Length: 224
Image (cartoon, rainbow, N blue to C red; front, side, top):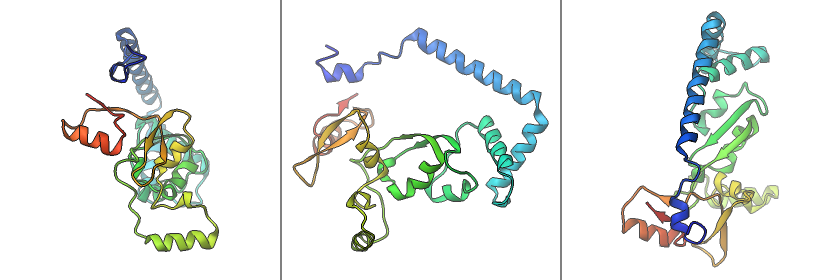
């Protein structure tokens, strides 16, 4: 049954009702029509602010420029292009004009490879954040030797939780997640907490799936 069989539960889609999906699609289409109508009603203002956004992206805008004008330029760009993709390495240069909680949503993908320090500036600028990643796959890549990290940590009295070689943005997000599961650790007998796991796997065939499932996921993954 749905309650006792994890394969049945995880492979089901109780929210994918056909009427609900059709209505949701229609709402999206109507929202796009509304955006287009808005743009067509004030094309000159939209063009002016988009030019301003292009200047920001090109590094041609001084940090001393009026903050409201900057907000309008960014808001116009996000109105036309709702999702902007960037990397942590370039985020501070791209959004250095933006202050605390000036961005609506931040989506961090492959967060298991991101050091907590690299995500700090993006988190500070966002009001809401979705962090998605797999702590059992690739670990964060840190160029600073581990001994140097430990020396700096000890000198400044920082907890080991914040060592970039030991933890990622994903593992720290998992720590405060109310929903999740326990997995066994490779290096100790103590289990560790994984927040809101996506258990269904569709990427590789057996026996690769079975091997990975036993080695890294304590047999909790579901094959599809």
